[in-house]
Length: 109
Length: 115
Image 1 (tube, chains in turn yellow, green):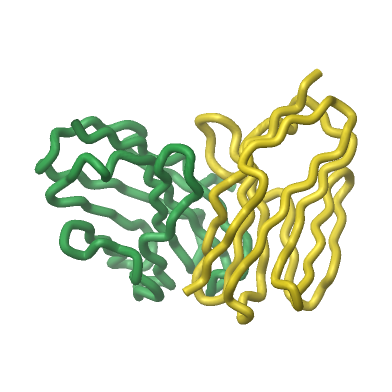
Image 2 (cartoon, one colour):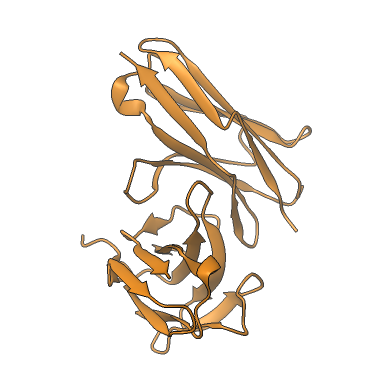
């Protein structure tokens, strides 16, 4: 079955710097790759997603890149702000959605 | 639009007891998911419904967990009997379109503590 790995598990950046989170997946049939943000004690919320027919997608300070050949995708957050501090989960989906273990991002003011 | 509703929000039970969780998805959403999220981990899919049919329950521990979505709207997840390792947040999510390749909207979750 599908397996999703995510690195790093924790990430600390200074406010204004960029943050990059990387994920790899095992099932080449996966065709949908969402990223969810989960603040402490709250529900996961979709922040950006990408489909397998697209290599890159950007939404303001957030961008996601997908390399289907290497089976990895990455989340890029630019000009980080303290409110970006949260746990970020990548996921890969074909028949079922498989989540990565999460990255705890801390943005230091 | 109203979001995904779940109840109860918190539940504490002793091991070997039974517990049930309820979820009401966003109106019109065909696909409903139940996830188990253990502290410090990503959500793990337990079961996925499309309308009132099961699409995937390969990771549901069927000896103790059961779920139903009888009328294709709200759903219940039951654990009987509970074990200590069942302590987790149980998240319900729904999506408008059929299949798993679309945005999921999560409910607030039910935090289960098994003592």
